[in-house]
Image (cartoon, one colour):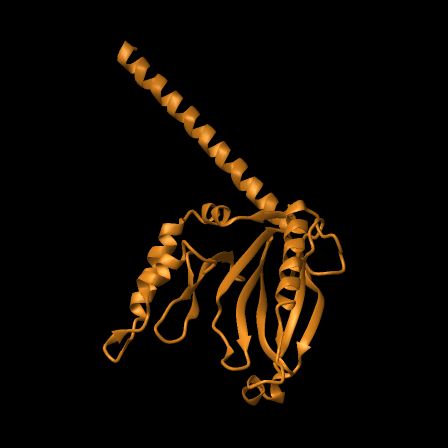
Length: 261
């Protein structure tokens, strides 16, 4: 056997060795992933139940409302106090900040007085002239749960406004960890710029012209993403990463949602 043949054989063994390491490493990663899923979900009677070891209160959901203050039944104006039911610093801090926010908004309610406004704001408003509105939504998928907050405003003269800002709080219920937008984008191997590109495409596809003027303000909608709380990322109930954003228009602003998958 000559020197060249020895080189080829040596290279072949080296290649098989590297291939074996890669295969073994892939197996370990797969095994770890399966173990994580098994830790996250428990299958009982064809139902999926999430591991609740990190719950503070085992009798409650991962996110629930501790208190609901009804200010006006007529207007269905209710202030809810959400609780992130996880034993972690992140959950405790965000729960406290949400309580402070709800208190601040509730204290900003303006009542009508004996003035001209009463001729516009009659008894059907329960005496409320202006009031901040907070709406919540909860989304859960496997080990992830998200609380979404929408802020708008009520005026007895103009009614309920479009959503003015939004926030979202996503948690891993196995660890109690709060996931930032950056964490979510990394998990789904995508980027903010990709979300903006998809959003821009949808805005152009949904564009309509009224009296010769384009109704959707595409540039303003995109520029607002850098200035205000006008967009959020979260994992929906199908396990997809979605981007929700406020669309600026010449008529009535609205919010829309796209999937980044």
